[in-house]
Image (cartoon, rainbow, N blue to C red; front, side, top):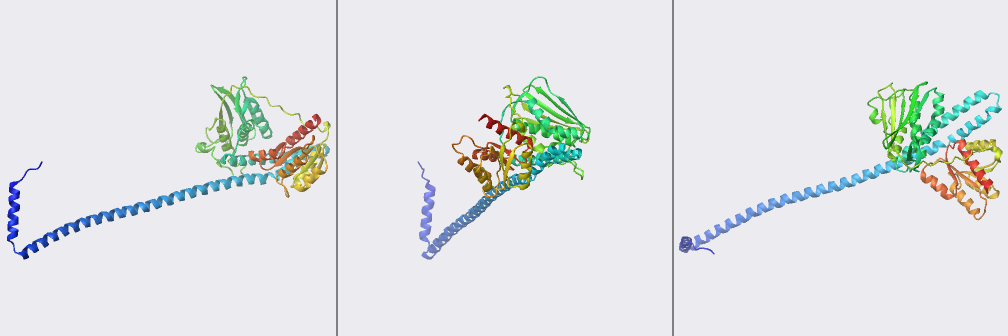
Length: 462
């Protein structure tokens, strides 16, 4: 509740009385001045509002510009991401295609080496033929290993490697790896010292991939160790882990290289002769495969010229290892097979025909898909060996039509696919089309003869 100020009221009354006493002209002038003051106050307020509006407008423009830059940056980042993914995809496809194309000339070389070995006994120059055959075989095997590493690098970068995991005996895996590199070690006069525990050590993994891991490490040890050098392979149990150590007294690794030794395409200094060879891929593949098995791999070296040590640690498996059944080796005396060989590489086809004929089989050939299908439908064959990439119709279509034509029949040919493509989906696609087995070029002659022996056994059981 307010209070009344008598002095203020008296002052207002005096002002009114004084105003009433002013002449009309002065009253108007006084009112005009009061109006001007009010307008000036209003104008000042408007100027303040105008300045505030301008400031807000400028901020809005800055925010709009910043938002546009953010949108452009987001779009640019997405474009760069898409470009990087596309580049990586093209690189992966290129590596796979390169490996496939380079495999094609290896097939006739591989078969020629096997033919040379078979003809050694019938020749007067047996020692020279044996030497030439050995050179061809070693170089083919070397190139095949390089291509396998190249293709595996592409598969790993695209996440396309799958593992067939099961309980394994570590000793069996190491035996396979040793068998793979033993010819190289013998050729260079190197000593391989092996120290394995008496107790069985079981691990869980893919036998093919783990054999590849240890064969790669042993192969590297041989490669970077001089003739007559020493390589040691040791394995032991460490609590809940299995430890495998591959060491050598070879060229060693410089300290600045150790942190990078498992990176892709990384290699230490090489001479101009590049006698050690390699692509800088193998150890990267080793690290990734070991990691996929839940393990680790490390490298250590006292320095250049002082050898190196690679240590693999894998989880111990308590489940018993499965015993793989090894099919009996082929023998021509057990009975020849009638084989149809469909391959568009004429050299590879003719060489493989000679190799199979030398093993005692009757072999017919076709150099394209249509001719192969016509022959397969015209007469019965025990085995069809068919390339996948064929002119006319591809090997998948040949097999699909052939299986359709033999639908309902008790006897059908045993089908073996030959292909330069080695990825899991390629294998699955071929088996889905009706092939019984799948071999990646260059197929090892012994592996091919083993499959021929398997087909012969199935025919005898039928």
